[in-house]
Image (cartoon, rainbow, N blue to C red; front, top):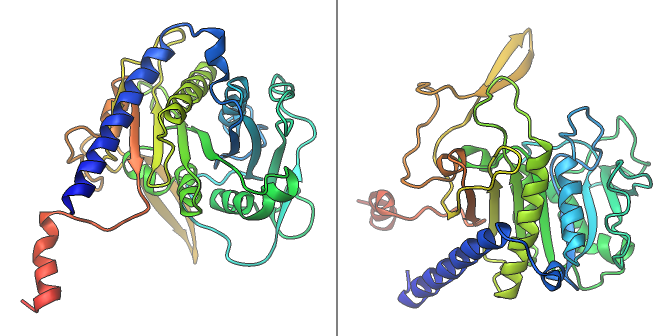
Length: 348
């Protein structure tokens, strides 16, 4: 790598790390009133992969999104939601390559979130996006998370919100559960954020964690969604102030489960771990296979172990907020490619 590029990358990493530290400090102390509008004038497209329905009994299909919407608007942002009509967890960066998409505005918002963005220029409009030209209904196929972001940037926001040159930022989440280690590859929340920077708009992905002590019923506590959203809004304000909202990489933030009233231990700059966290099973009945999945138990031979020193998942499990840069560039670099490189270039 060019030495100037290396130095620039190190400088950017150090500056974002400083922002991590200061965001944690801000999260731990009361803020003066003039800091509560740190996102004033910022136009935010908000999406996720859990959908905008928030209709399930445990609210796993969108509660995190409404908490983030509330926090961003409270900080002064103008927020428009364009999210999948139905749950699209695990679809990664998949996108619809043809046909039609329908954007349908939600008139009645979930109880408790109705007036959160009433003072914003856009009024905090919430849209669900489905496939096809008919109105979205219970059985309508949903657009993917990447679809919603590309649509919003590519004409949806201009048509619905009048943002001809916006948004300024895409925020995705907060997700029902963390997006760390191997799960990052499958995450629609991260996939939507990657779609944003591919379209030239900075993006931050927010994720809310389960209680790591509970393995038989994975649930995100209501206070974890709220803590994630409030931390995320303050952190984005710090990034904005320092000019660190970038299209070079997605800023992937995972907030740990803590008991109500407890703060995270610290905010840590991490890398995506190598550990395989979920394994899938395919049960055959004739030509049909039923898909099932489970968390990888410790020591499972078919689950890849962790090989990095400071991976995101390990630090998250210990109670830290993790901040990880995720790039769309999948080119692998390092010594383990040298032999292949020499063979391709020289036939040896």
